[in-house]
Image (spheres, rainbow, N blue to C red):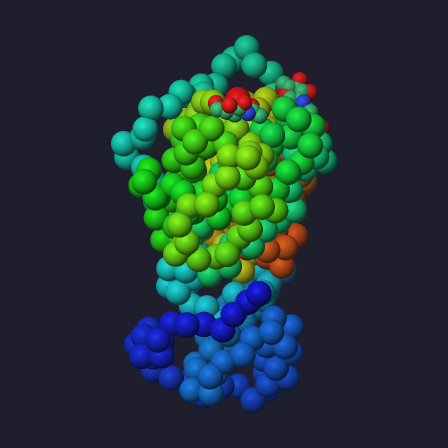
Amino acid sequence: MFRAMTVPLGLLLALLGCTRAVDPALEEAWEGWKSLYAKEYPEEAEVIRREVWEKNLRRIEQHNWEESQGQHMFRLGMNHYGDLMDEEFNQLLNGFTPLQHEEPALTFQASAARKTPAEVDWRVKGYVTPVKNQGHCGSCWAFSATGALEGLVFNWTGKLTVLSEQNLIDCTRKLGNNGCQGGYMTRAFQYVRENGGLNSELVYPYQATDTSSCRYNPGDRAANCSTVWLVAQGSEAALEQAVATVGPVSVAVDASSFSFHFYKSGITSCTWRSGGIFSSMFCSQKVNHGMLAVGYGTSQEGGKNVSYWILKNSWSELWGEQGYIRLLKGADSHCGVANQASFPLL
Ligand SMILES: *[C@@H]1O[C@H](CO)[C@@H](O)[C@H](O)[C@H]1NC(C)=O
Ligand SMILES: *[C@@H]1O[C@H](CO)[C@@H](O)[C@H](O)[C@H]1NC(C)=O
Ligand SMILES: *[C@@H]1O[C@H](CO)[C@@H](O)[C@H](O)[C@H]1NC(C)=O
């Protein structure tokens, strides 16, 4: 499932700058990591991948040491992306750019009349399929969209059906989506609405490539939608009400930081006050990665109540908290979480 890198060697050397010898003390750990994730490299690439991996490992250890000193609310962990540099990671996996001119859609506004529970988790209500893996393809937008549609189908039928990202990748080019080079959840919903359906993963399986033509089969319709909704931009209150009353909602975040790539557990935040202000995770309002908000909650951290969003990712269960991240909630749309939220309805 995890293939060796295909980035040209010349580019790698240029990005790395000067080369440094590898640390012989890490030999066993490196071999163990390669074998765990079935990594194989051409001989000339191995030393470079090892250096990238060691650099990532040192940054992860540094962060976790800081966490043990009370400077962060979350921990990092080595994962299957350990041989990627930040630049490569963002090129390969983040496939969402904010839309300036949105297609006609309805806007979901916060309303004082709508009461929301203190905690919501659609996973325990059966609305959420197992965590998927987009592979080396910037198709996060398709995974985010199927997630919202899977919740909608569950609400209507009471049945959980895994829906097809490949169907969206192959068939939404005419709406301006760009396969593994990125796309928009709203355009995916628009396709399902105009097409009058979407196939399931079972009949239209994921390939992590974008070179196939559209093979939608109307005889195998597994989902439908009739309207596309945008959550009022930047409003976490509206997002909370949407998540509480509709079900899982598609969101986009800035996922370009090192801390995001190697997130392991806890509540991610930019700043966390603990006798001082520490900068934990850099993230901007410029969103680049599609995810699925499946709920929210509050936990006690250092004697304080800290609220968070529960976001489903598509980087496999090996990443984060079994494939999920908890992101600080109620802090001016942290990482842009409320900036491009959307959902379909039937
Ligand atoms: C679907 O949503 C409606 C309205 O929120 C709710 O009353 C109903 O119980 C939901 N159905 C399922 C299967 O969860
Ligand atoms: C989905 O939409 C199509 C086209 O509007 C319609 O023919 C079909 O009955 C709908 N299916 C469901 C399950 O609602
Ligand atoms: C945290 O929330 C709980 C439950 O809402 C509340 O009882 C408690 O007083 C809160 N603690 C702080 C420190 O705000």
